[in-house]
Length: 316
Image (cartoon, rainbow, N blue to C red; front, side, top):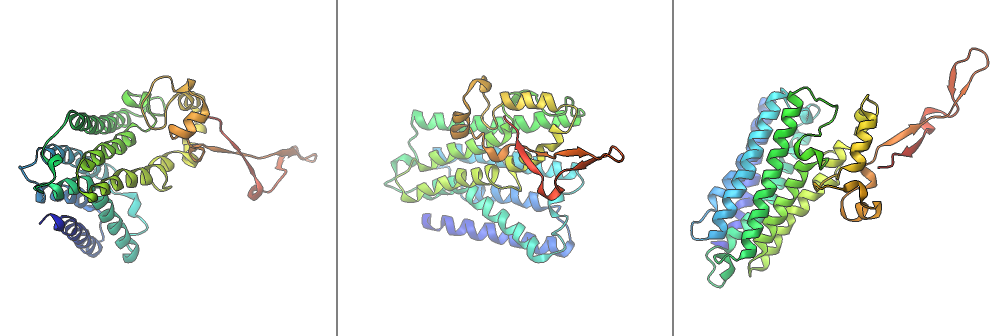
């Protein structure tokens, strides 16, 4: 039944991730964490698929391409890095390890909501929009597909750059020349397009689709442990205290943090702050220590204790 779609998806998702936690905790390994996350997405798509809806058919294909790529890429990256450092301090602590698995379950469920909404509305007699696609729908599908392409191509470009020895000190190849985080842009926009596609329905529950891009934006743009916050801010030290500091400063001033674009350096900072995600929290704060010279031996001594050092914002 249509009304059971959300409940069945929740039972499958949280049940699968809980089973994964039990096995991983017993074996003291995180090796199949990302694999079960990717498989969970694909199972939701397969179990709810119906050939009676053209909208669902297109959405399912794009959904599986997106999540299938994520499954392959994360599994390869974990193998290449010989493990996942996120779990170094939690794998021996069952309750904290459990939280990681439940967070993954919540992530899978919320990201999948546009697909679940269309699965729910498929076959409802008074929902004409379920099967009849418009030119706007096709444009949205194109936007969804292009966003997936943006994420996949960005991941591949940066991976090749890393394997090639990280030439230049920071990535400026392909999409990375026009965005500091094009892969995150692809991830966010694909779920925004998917949410609008899911919302093209007469069902009130269709608005749940927008939890998908909102959750994605939250974890990629605002959480300190992941996304842009994790890549920038204090972690920009690796660039500003390197031989490529001047080059990176120029790159940052002329490159959008998210949406790939040309001419970013000419846009007023007020617009960057308000519309283009150039937030102050992403800036690197330099430590400023005032020093004086001791008369006795010429050694430099801090004028203030290290714990009272002030900071100066880097102007992007």
